[in-house]
Length: 262
Image (cartoon, rainbow, N blue to C red; front, side, top):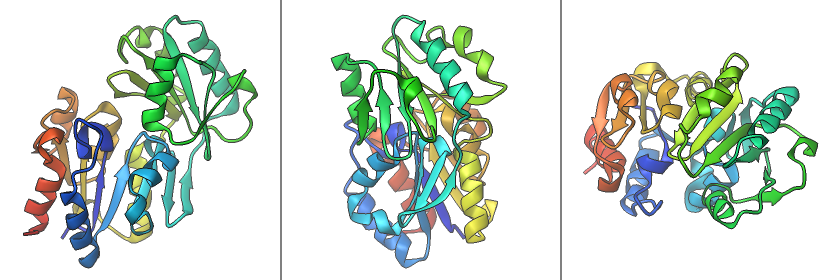
């Protein structure tokens, strides 16, 4: 019996317009009636997720910033920030590379230095609350994630510059143009395991959906692991099952099929 369902958003639950299919809310209601916990598991900011699921935010779990912040009913369940010295090293490295820009995620706000309009438009998509600052190294408070954006693509020269941090940070591609760095061991999979322990839910009772490399650990945290048909090829190898493309309402249709919702 499935007791926990966690899904990525972009390229997974959301369609090509970054919208949620209205049918999802009918299915969500059925899940709640059966006592099944639903969680969004995303690289997006917590505040962005709250805005996305405004009408049901008090009845679901939020795994945000690639698993570095987990919140349920407004209560922080897990927080796993980056080391401050490492944060500054990543900032200095990124500043030295042409075309790469930084989004630094705190618990309440994200922070950027760049005033480039095209970049800010991208930031607006994933971050509901952010501030433009003069110097990211002077931002105080816990930093959950550093996202590196490059319009040329997430893999553009990233191994050259950021692999050196892999012994101290989790480095993964989270989207076509995004590379994320979080605390070592902090990922969606470790966050789901925390939720499983908290709710006494087993590996075999968990269902997950994803499409990108930041979903790899999540695939390993559940028996019912689904890669979207539009997913990264490596993720398809890791996942046990497949779901239709995000543009075909794949997540909702698969939940209805497995949970037997008419």
